[in-house]
Amino acid sequence: MNHVIALSGGKDSTAMALRLKEIEPRDYIYICNPTGDELPEMLSHWRNLETLLGPIVDVTNKTLTFWIEHFKSLPNWRQRWCTRLLKIEPTIAFLKA
Image 1 (tube, rainbow, N blue to C red):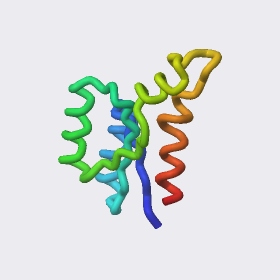
Image 2: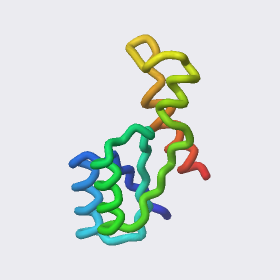
Image 3: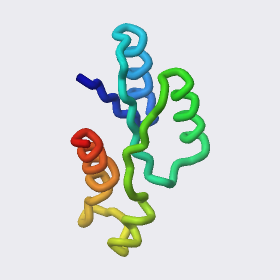
C-alpha cells in the first residue's frame, strides 16, 4: 500500500509531512499541485522540503494561465473551476494511475 501526502506548501501540510516522517517512517509519496504562478519563495520552500523528505511529485497537468485562457475568465463565484481543475482532478488522476 502506498501512502500519499499532499503538500500545499503551507505550514499545516509541511508540519504534518515532517511529523509523519519523524514518528511514522514509511515510503511516502509526496505530491503537490502548483498553479504555475508560485512566487520564488514557494518554489524554494518545496526544494527545501525535498531535501528533508525526498522527491515531491508535481501532479498538475495544466497551469492556472491555461485555464484562464480556456474559460476566458478568472475563477469567480460563478465559475468555480479553479480548485477542481488545478487540485482535485489532477490528484485523482495521479492516484488512479
